[in-house]
Length: 384
Image (cartoon, rainbow, N blue to C red; front, side):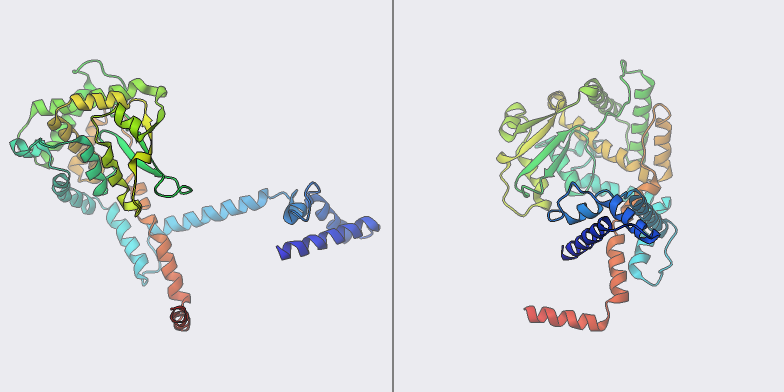
């Protein structure tokens, strides 16, 4: 602020001097032009010195330079990830390089995903299609599947997408939830069970199930999964552009949808809040199609719901699995356009978050000397 006032005073004096005397040299003329063109005389220099001095300045070129610099930085980071790094002696950068290359290698990632699936199914309560008669339906609630999938870090939302929205201004206790539905699986309405899209989807499901370990062909159960997918898609497609969110209190939510154990939603907040939560004070932004979705889920047998949910887990994982799984998806996607996240994009985002701490470590390694380390240690000791 002090420097700004000094500069403002200098401009005022110069401008006053220019106004008081004749402009006799080109240098004086240039100074006068710069001052005149940049001044914003509508501003009070005592209130906003920078606006008074530079308020009319054309900063377009400066913004362009900043954008260019940002683009250059992004390009550098992309090269660092995708083309490897010249800092091979620095272990954090080497680890980033290794993670990216492993992620991009089909045989490395695919086999790991395939091997981890049985454990994932087990954590989620097992897949009835794999378990057969051993799978028990007692105490099953579909909301438990959503909670368990969040706990193990999966972003699969087979029924509803329930996400906590924490307002940073109000603190973690003033929490809001969005309760929405994922886009439909099918991109058009289907009128009969012999539709080629349904047939292709059923084949996709059955063949993928065989690859993952289904020893029998449970045609009726496969049909039940496809029928549920069909009905959910129709609900979402009918909503179309009329899809809206309505704000409800916890009391209103439980009264309107009593079959759902909404109180369990508080467990979603465990990782992000250390304070005692009062769910009755929470607000919910609810999808306009929620009534239709919950009515359908309430009428569907638990075994069908759990078969469907585990299939969606497998379907979500297929782009990262081995070639035989990916070939099945490509065949299915001949009947409708499928939106996939490119492997390169996924892997790039997966490792990009590690760059900042790696750069900080590199800076510390190069510029944080032993003398500095000793000085900081002494400062910490003195504070204690």
